Amino acid sequence: MYEWSDEHRAIIDAVRRFVDTEVRPHLDGLEHEGDAPYEVLRAFYRTFGLREAAAESFERALARKRGGERPPGSSDPAPSVLATIELCRVSPGLVTSLGVSTGLAAGTINRLGTPTQMERWGRDLLTLDKVGAWAITEPDSGSDALGGMRTSARRDGDEYVLNGQKTWITNGPFADTLVVYAKLDDGSRTDPRERPVLTFVLDRGMAGLEQSAPMRKMGQHASPTGDVFLSDVRVGRDRLLGETETPEGGGRTSARDNFVTERAGVAAMALGVIEECLRLSVEYARTRTLWGQPIGEFQLVQLKLAQMAVARQNVRQMIFAHLERSRDGVVASLAEASAMKLYAAQAACQVADDAIQVFGGNGYVTEYRVEQLSRDARVLRIYAGTDEMQVVAIAKDLLANYPT
Image (tube, rainbow, N blue to C red; front, side):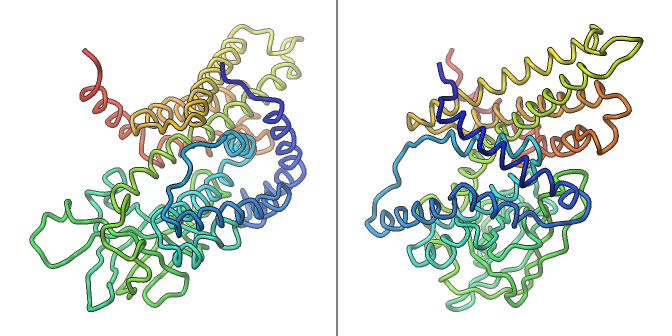
C-alpha cells in the first residue's frame, strides 16, 4: 500500500517551515494588496534548489530532443505533489500561478518545440526566470475550448496573422511568454469546429498583443488572471511550436494532454485545502467554549469534523493510487483524471464550507483564514473543466469502455 516515505515526510517538514516563514507573512499583501506572487515563488525555488534542478532537467530534455529520444516514462512524482499540497494549505493561488508557468507553458514548449524553441523560451520558464501563460480559454468557449475556439491564425506569406481574445488566463497580466492556441484559417470551407489547432509562442510587448490588468476575483488572489487580446499579431514560423502545422502530439492532442495533467493536479490542490481546514477546525473545536464546554463536545460539530476527516482520507487515497501508477509509468486517462478532479474539488469546497460553519461568525472574517480557503477552493470546480464537463468525460468513457 502506498504511503509517504521518510524522505517524503522530510520534504513535507521542510516545505512547511518555508511556508510558515516565507509565505504566511506575505498573505495580506497577496490577498488584499495586489502583490504579484512571483518573488515568493522564486524564493521557494531558491530555498530548495529548484532553479538549478530545473535547469539540469531542461538540459537533459534538450539533449534527448536533439538525439531524437523520447523522455523517460516514469520517475517519482511525489515531491512535486507534496509541494503542491503544502503550498495549498496556505495559498492555492501560488500553486496555480506556478503550475501554469512551469507546467503548462514551459511543458508545452519543451514537449512540442524544436531544440531552438526550447532554448529560446523553455529554459527560462522552467527555472522561473520568466513567467509564462497558457492561453486557450475564450469568452464564448470555456467548456468547449477546442470546438468553439474563434482565435484565428491566417497564413500571410511566410508569416501568420493572429486575431482573437483569450480570457481567464492565469499569469496573463504579467507573463513574459505566452503559449497561444489558435484555429488555422486557410480560407477553405472546412467547418470551423474541425479546423486544425495551432500553437504559437508570443512575447510581451509584441505589436498587436495586449495583456489586461488583473481581474478582481472571488478567490485565488495570489494568482493574477487576465485577458489577452490579439489584433493582427504577426508571427513567423519560428514561433509556431515544432515549426510545423502538424507536430507530433500538437494542437488538439497537446491541449487534451494538458487537461489530464491539470485535472490530476487539482486533486492535490484540493487535499491541501482539506488538510488545512481540518487542522484549523480541530484546533478551534478544542479551544472555543460554549455553555461551559469546548464546542468539540457537541455531536453536530463532531459530525462535521468526522466528515472532513473522511473526505481527507478519500482524496489522499485517490492521490496515493495516482502516484503509485505514475511511478510505474501508467498515464491516467482523461476520464480517470476527471474523476479525481470532480470528487476532490467538490470535497474541498464542502470541507471549507463546513469549516466556516464550525467557526461560526469568526469563520466569516479574514483573521481565521477559513474564509480565504473557501473562496480559493471554489474555483477548483470551474477551472481545468467545470464539474459538468468532468461528468461528461466520465460518462462517455463508461458508455464506451465499461465491461459488460
